[in-house]
Amino acid sequence: MLKLLSLTTSVVLIAAFSAAADEKRLDNPQSELVPVESVNWGYLNPLRGDKSPGAANLWGDRTIDSATGMLVRFKPGFSSPAHIHNISYRGIVIKGLMHNDDPNAELDWMATGSFWTQPAGQNHITAAKAETNLIYLEIDEGPYLVKPSKAQFNNGEHSLNLHSDNMVWFNSDELTSLDSKNVTLTPLWQKQNQQGVLVKLDAGFNGQLTSERGSLRAVLISGELNYRSVEHSEAKQIEAGSYFSSVAGFKHQLKTEGGAIVYVRFNNKLQISEQ
Image (tube, rainbow, N blue to C red; front, top):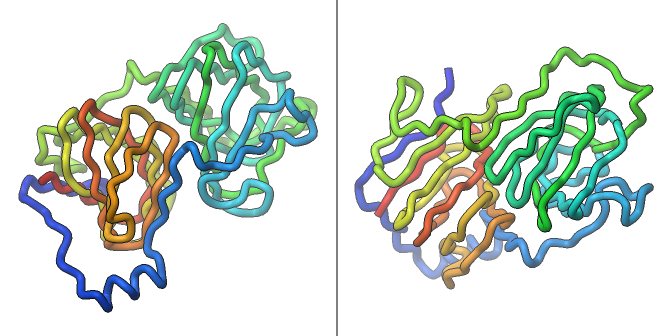
């Protein structure tokens, strides 16, 4: 059973920290903030050079045996040759229009907020249509490699294309307690003690996000957020593609004027409290 989210409408304030406690946190950071404008870009498939999509690790390292989350950007009109990957991945569209399917499938464009999975060994193509095309791509193991179609194999998984228009957003169900009128979510995947959800923060949301135990990794998929925390006391306006993370119990203060969608990967229980 999924236990995804616990929300309260009570006012939640960051507890006052002593100077010594603040100093200790800063000496041993509990969080990370990576604005999209500061990421370091390379190539998703270095062997193809500038014919390859650009790629930037947000966390992990896609070149080794490591779970990794990365940004991938595609030029207008990009269409890959048919190929496979050695490992499975998940993708979420941040900007533009993306297609990912069997080489013989009809083009079916996915817009911002759409989600897909690509099983290891399955033959497919990836294409991009808009002027600006950006996705978040996540793997649970590495390295991330591109191989020719002749190497295809069946790993027993099935691909999924979930268009943003077809997503169902929950404010309450038997698996989740959602008590705020300004927050809804849609669960995307669960694997052992890890799970991933899209969280929609409506216009005017002002509150905090934290995980009860384990790690939390979040990527802003759409909209803008005013971000701050005990380790980033000066408010920072972040745009789609930006990333933040933390260890258990760390509080991320989030505020949005126009609304935002955030992808969150976490262990155990996720908590969002609105002020």
